[in-house]
Length: 98
Image (cartoon, rainbow, N blue to C red; front, side):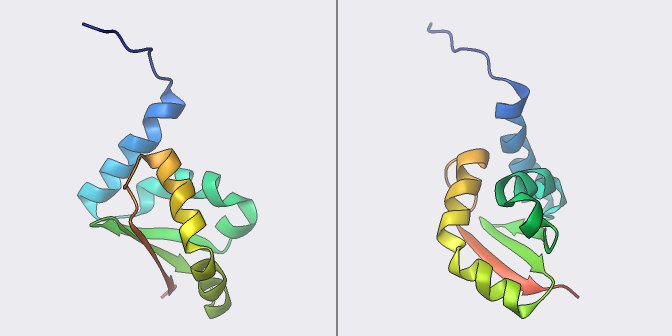
């Protein structure tokens, strides 16, 4: 039986958070991963709301932010999946905060 190298908590935690978010349907467990992915400027204006069926819904503070981030959807999805695991996020939807 081949042994794998042990993984660090930084490597394991995002995948665990993605599972928690998917099971609960809530995006709150993904806040640390989202913030680390998008950086402080974007995270100040956005917040993960829910993750269901691979679709991550992100609340944004304005229509301008929704439009800007929609244009970056592919890149953001790739970056999130590199942290959360392949296919964890299949789509991003940006909606105005209520």
